[in-house]
Structure formats: structure tokens, C-alpha cells
Image (cartoon, rainbow, N blue to C red; front, top):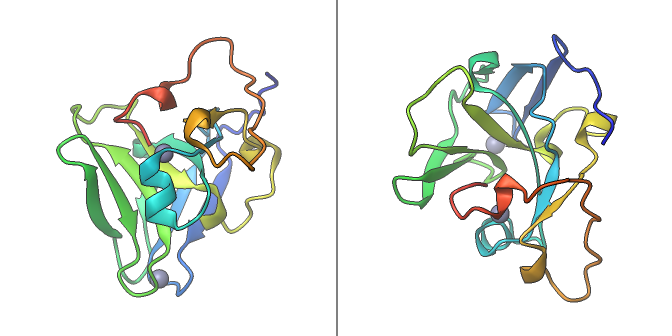
Length: 154
Ligand SMILES: [Zn+2]
Ligand SMILES: [Zn+2]
């Protein structure tokens, strides 16, 4: 796959009503992907969610509402963040590992202020077998099984 050099690049995003805002500094995690798992479909009310990620150490919640409201989709393993006022889905993070400099904060690509960028074009579709049958899958550009196929990963 072609990697876009996003180191040092500034990204902003947030929810529909503006209470929950974030700023992240690149690099991105290099794994923009759709996910059609049951949790992504149910939580979004959509056919899939589009995920990207940043290093947690390069990520900050900086809107008037602070952090989103968190819901543990896999209790003790994964939590997902949404705005308690407008309901926008914004983020997800694994919580079953100690936080390190490699910990990734997953964000939903549509929450970005400028989502139409090369580094956010999906390269894989997680849980493609569980996608709606009428939804064409994203061709995977990965050489190895994706981490998104693991149940604890958003
Ligand atoms: Zn909101
Ligand atoms: Zn999912």
C-alpha cells in the first residue's frame, strides 16, 4: 500500500453539535478501514463505520464538553465515545492493555473536519463477512490479516 507521510500534520474533528472536539497530530495509524461488525452497525445505525487512528499521546479532547461519554462495547476491553448531547459517534479505544506510547485512539473518519484526504481512504473492511449482502466490500490492501478482525478491536 502507499503510505502518506502524515507525521506532524494537525487534524481536528468533533461531533455534530460541537461540544466534543479533538485535535490530533500525525502520523495516523496507517490503517483507515471500514468495519461491519455487529457493534459498528448497531452503534452507528449505519451499514458500516469508517475508522482511522492516532497515537493517544498525540491526541487531545479540547472542546467545551471535554471527553465524550464512553460506553464499553466489550466490557473491560473496548470502549466507544459519543456526544451525550447530539449522539454523534466519535471514537473508540481498547482498554484492556496498559497505556503506552503506542496506544491508539481510534476515531471515526466522518468526525474529522476534513475527512476527504488520501490517508483516510479505507484500505480494508473489517468483518466483511458480516456486512450487508448488498454492500460491496472494500478490497483489502493488507498483506496480513487485519487487527480489526480481532473482537476487541474497533
Ligand atoms: Zn455533540
Ligand atoms: Zn466494528
